[in-house]
Image (cartoon, helix red, strand yellow):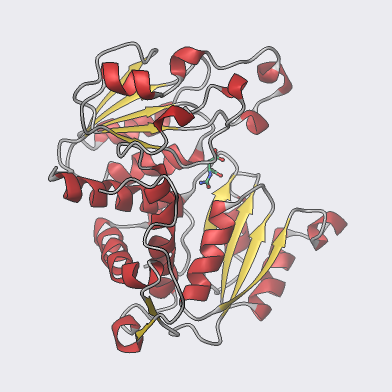
Length: 342
Ligand code: NCD
């Protein structure tokens, strides 16, 4: 495996399957039943130059749960980049302090440029509208886990992606990752001007998948297995696009859409954050507590998957089982008050 995780492009099917297997072995630690110290002494540098809650905190928590420690910096204002420091210099400096680095940056390609200046593993935590490979891995892990629970095969699955497919980096990475698996059906529904880039559609179609673009959710989606909805990435809009843009309610995934248009066990996923302001028309809260809503199981899966990424890149993935001890503190059976019992 490449020393870095920058794009889904660098992953082979075997490497992905390995990461998913290691992630499954991390579950007892992620679920706070066991502890390990395999990364004791190691230091993670978390560099976030764009807003983040779950990616930053879950990478941080995953490293800590492996026994390591984390140093982080958020925003340009409090980093030397505000003084004009280059990505090259920042990278070399950080490599002298840390054993792994996670970076999020608003410019596409910036994390790869940063990684080119170091031999310390660098993970792309999102580079502008480019990619978000760890999110795609946790999305795939979630789909695989939920399908196993529902007794469904991944081969031939029908995945509906909706929302901002132009700037949403999570769907860019996810569609590439899914395209490495057995032929699927992928339906793309984006508001005007926010369609999935053509080169990604062509890539997926060239690998034998059936890709279809529709302009509305008002259709029959009874055979859709997963509805993957995303937030409109307004922060990436040009001034011209922002002017007067508002997402029509017709693109909202809510209980009525799921009950009327989808199947009984259609799963709803979202990389989060969902924009809960009423005018945003993002994924509706009326599905909270509904077992079909997999969004918080999805965020929970961020921990074992990110642990697997660190363990694999830092080559301790074979040591985990030898280093487990039981947890000694109190952990509630369900961490969320509305969590569905499956
Ligand atoms: C996404 C991101 O930052 O790309 N969030 C995440 O990491 N889970 C999606 C978004 O911001 O809409």
